[in-house]
Image 1 (spheres, rainbow, N blue to C red):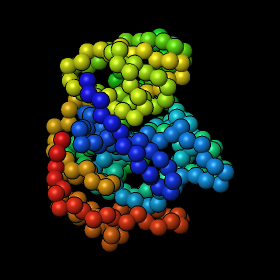
Image 2: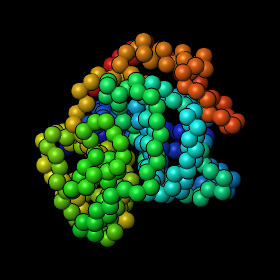
Image 3: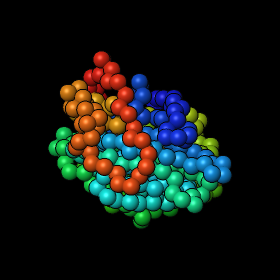
Length: 293
């Protein structure tokens, strides 16, 4: 296993996040190509979170809400407030734009994970879609509550529609406990501690580290303190070379440049209606941008 440090960034107006993927050490885990962890955060009175209109291509945005609420609105016309134990899944495909913000009268508490899933070449240019999931499979094991976010695990299947062979599960310890989880040896895996204290294979994991396992691992032994929470993500290694840049996942610099031009020229990505906030500005595309796995 490999310890990969996360990095701290500010998203939107004032939300501090820990970014686990992509990193210099690891770009993807299966088709998971992005992982941000925000919170637990308590906003001051009158504060909240807001990200103005911005575009996506070639990926799915996957928001897992643990505490608080976030309001989503996109250029397809979908408006959805996501609450604890729910998932928002936006499939960008050929192109979509959206905003995310704290809803009116929101709780001061916020805790969430947002991930991206790289779409395979066969789906990367598909029409955009949006789906909201309120009910997910829950498994009780060894005083742990396991919520299956994506894929298959322990005989259960998530309803969340993904296009790669992959999985994701939220694990919440209800008491001081230990448990053994079976793994698919064809998958690579990552563990991110969201809160509490955790030992994996007798190795202590801190909250600023992503723990990576290459394919071949058949099980994991976890020791958790009460109220510890973690994400376990995995999947078959993604065999396609892709470029992950800004809000885009593409196959070539030309594709990324075209998407950037289309956003600047206000074509392709539609418009988020009725939202008075500046559109995000495309950053300069670096000269050394190239595809990788």
